[in-house]
Length: 325
Image (cartoon, rainbow, N blue to C red; front, side):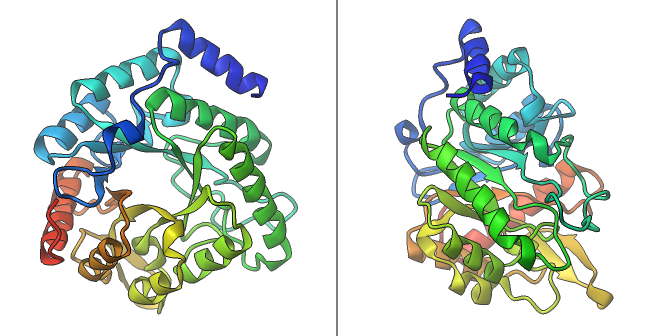
């Protein structure tokens, strides 16, 4: 254990947090009785008020799981020990379990490469870490998994380059090393396919997974992100290429494509993603991890109002797929 993680966990111990919440295994895999998935929502897609987000997720959406990204206008990785304690108390109050730490790990520029056009303009979700800070950030995220009783950390693979080929092996090696660090703590590293990063589609994700065979290196499959690429068909085309046993998390959003390669987010069920087919395929493959709403759409005026509409769309798609959640 490195000094940074040891110091972090020592601080948690001093505030009575080091034992963590009950493990994911203790809770079982299901989101609710009969549901094959851990139905979830990213907390700050509802509100920066963490208790309000948890209340909506638990009481209004009927969820038992929640994904943590940011709260109180702070990224999850910037919470202090007092805020972590408060967040844990809120989770306990609403009987919510944590799917993963939705960290910004490796959402930064790759050193030595041309500056990505994505680098200066993307929404950081209250986080900004340069490449030199990534190793310490990873250690801190592992500490957060212990504090919040989860076994998963979300990551990316650096801001998207016009030509990543000269740098791809270096990126893969960095991801391999991170997975090896996580494995020592029984943590799964989830690579999200993200249109602003170098793995954006199912096709690109399949290639990276083939290059990094570590069993604890898995995919956070996001068909909506893949759908932003002109002509790309996330399901079934991209999905069919993925090694199904390597999918460890799923983000749910929808998108429509416009002329000139532009795109707009849509409520789930209102865009081009075949979520009914995707849900059926996930159930058929025996997938039992998170299906987590990350609507991004803001057409209802506020994050909460928009997320409520998208959650209904998600549940409608599950129902059409014949899946009781």
